[in-house]
Length: 268
Image 1: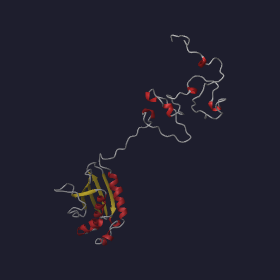
Image 2: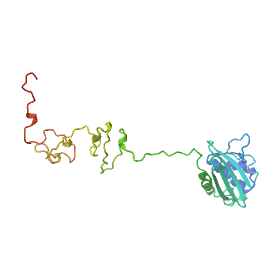
Image 3: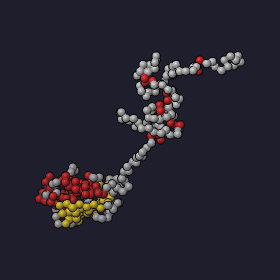
Image 4: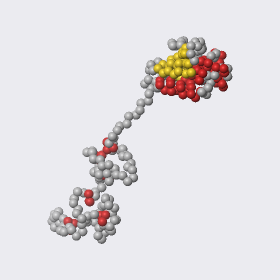
């Protein structure tokens, strides 16, 4: 409990009983959690200021210690009452803003050596346990100030990636295929197949004669094109742009061999 030693030295003239020393330690633990002491009693007094020191007259009543604290940001004000019941001290703390109440019961002999009230290095014991009891029994239950709790961001579930045309879809793991999504009737769907050729989308801007919808029997680039491409030159399922007329030897005249209409009309 760093910083407690100078506080104890300052308050030593007022410490005459073991419970005085325990209140001093509890006070410093609240200081460590961001609170400052305002004064004694249930009601505020004149010219009160937040301080790390104990106020004058804090030890006047050896049966009931009453202290008021305020957080550094003025969001919380605590009313602490330490009540002695035989050899135990009952701490009752109320947040005046939220009206939340927390209480802890401490056995004075577990944390104070009554025969060493004059020696700071020997008067306190089990300080880590004391800190844990104060934190879990008082600080945590009171929680953050009312209206000051941090609001968790709300995330939209089941977001359709096609809703935002500028948003990059999540990367798919190796060896998996992106799920097929129906293309929306939107001008932003143009070019979707070019960005995801294996996703089953439509709207590509690159013409693929083999996927144009016109039947092309007997054409499989992956098996090779006689006289032009050996088998395996085109990977299976790859987009293929032929570099010559498809279907060599097909029956009927080649449209490219027919003269244009009106070729012999001198007035054309």
